[in-house]
Length: 439
Image 1: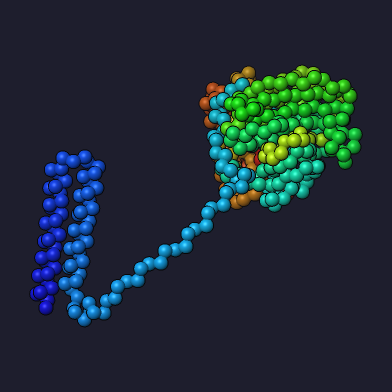
Image 2: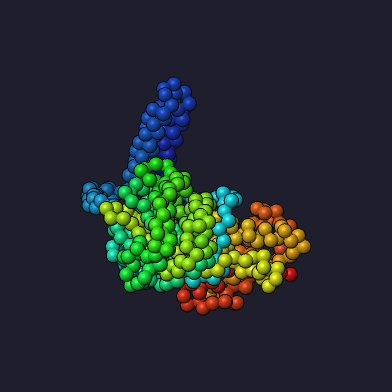
């Protein structure tokens, strides 16, 4: 029996080898179109190999084994999968890259020295309206595919105001991120305003205050490749006519748009990404006492789906030269990085330009660059991150502004030297900083 089985195995293996050799010769000698001929040869070879293998296996079996075998039951196909649910609008992918760092070469925005309010909606539940805001419309906290953090999606026309902002001094900066879906084409722009409310419990009357400065952002106005921005000013009860400008920064291409408003007494500057869209020396009354920040969408908008996040309000005018030359230290909250990263954000350019200007004009000045973090996360990881961020600032000053690297030392203190509490968003933001110390 062993001899018979062995011979069968040998004969079938030789048969299989002969088939494969024949196929190989046939494929070399083929003159038919390559794609069709190869497919036919491949199928033939597979069938021949399968037949030979089947016969070889049958030769190993006894008659009793063959009798025991029963035809396999036909497989039952699985039930069809239910159709996938359409993704929610708020979860639409927005992965357009941010503006390149180099494009900010004319960016001179420098945020205030002390952060007085921060909102990233981390404390609010997805699907809820934020607890510290007020509205006469509706909105909800969402996450967005391809973006970090949480966003407030404005879903109805009306006003939206953060109630924790009750004072906007004469030197103040306001920043936030704006996001709309690619191809966005709504009927009304997003308006945001500094306003002086006679009664802060009635924010719906924000337009009737004695002093109001309003800016609009209208991404992809009319479905174009550009958007528009306008401003209106009301000073001491007298309204001025609006003015409008187009900007490619508001193209509805799905990327995050960073908007910054800088008030210095009567002067107002508005930046959209790296572009300074407005610079108005007399747009605000010198006596204005702004006490509220309002986002607003006009009636009839429907589901505009404007989404805002990363709101930062800071007070105080930058005084870099005096701080570092006279006091020996300048603290910057305007040098920003990606989350848990040493990658500089483009909007850091203005603050870097500020310190680079002082270093350029004072050729004998040497500084130590020190990074600091908040207390979230592991101590050792924060220490390492702060050192890497300081090194990234030095590298940017050397590369972008041609500062001699020998004049710059770096260090990091992690979370070990807080200047504010670590239990509020604003406190944490104040602790996340870069210091320049005169040596």
